[in-house]
Amino acid sequence: MSAAGFAGACAFAPVWERALGDCMDRLAVPAGANLGFLYFSDRYTDDAENLFAAVREETAVEHWVGSVGIGVIGADQAHLGRAGMSMLVGCFPAGSFRVFSGRAPLRADKDGEEPYFAVVHGDPRTEDMSGLVADMSSKVSSGFITGGISSARRATVQIADGLLSGGISGVAFNESVSIATRLTQSCEPFADRFEISEAEGNIIGRLDGRLALDCYRETAARCGVHDLRQAASVVLVGLPTRGHDSDDYIVRSVVGIDPRNGLLAINEPVQTGQGLIFVHRTTVAAQRDMQRMLAELADDLPAPPRAGLYFSCTGRGGAMFGEDSTEIEMIRAKLGDIPLAGFFANGEISHDRLYGYTGVLTLFL
Image (tube, rainbow, N blue to C red; front, side):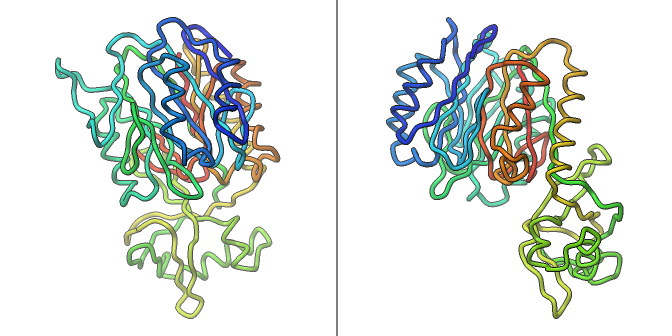
């Protein structure tokens, strides 16, 4: 699929050589293409060096960023758990972008100009990824980054003009590259808002002075869920974000309970005095919010999009939408046929936050 200055392709096959061949049959690389985004299945990871070398040779595109994923996303199809690859190549103005990683840190350019925006990929094994994301956002003048955390059954790998692992890598753009981006949630908040009145690390003791587990159990019962093991998959914790839209929140999973002491553990450290809500993860909520996000984005676009990147949570896909490709079909229905690439991530990045159970769409205009 092609648009002005961009082209994309996606293919699925048991071996990467066949997937790459199918992609190249569909990919009309624009003259002057100088940056590519590559996402490939974790089933290809053992031969990632040869895969990346072949992609560079076949496309003749010099600069690449990307990630391994349990599932990959293209303009017309997406699959979780199926071996495949997706790529997007584009012609960007000379000097408008810089690929960075731990080996080549992001700094101001020789004229002292800070980058404006970045697309980033992170290693899930890296400690304090939330802190790294916030730090990375402070290095771009807009304060805004998007991307995803690598997902894999075994080892993960990122691409930043070479293969690497650990930390954060990606590409930063200056203001000559126009983008638009939005985030969509999979959950619907319950009305009650709590304040954490007792906590240590990721363990919450009390909410508004009451045992945290009692508050959680009562909330789950409202949607007909009385088995706490079942509740953990549909009633999640939302942490409202400070300094953002008042309705914005990051979703975190319940990872443990202590019925004897009424404790609730989540996969994020919290602090006393912090706000907390419970959210209901449902198919209806995910589909409704996806439609909202796309409608708002389409209304705000100053120009038609030329290409896009989409990062969706591994907990979305067919589990939330019936089919892994439904999100892509919704994007196409609202925004038209544009080259697009992405993957199912282990966490999604938007602005200065690491989210979960979300979809993040970034458009090049």
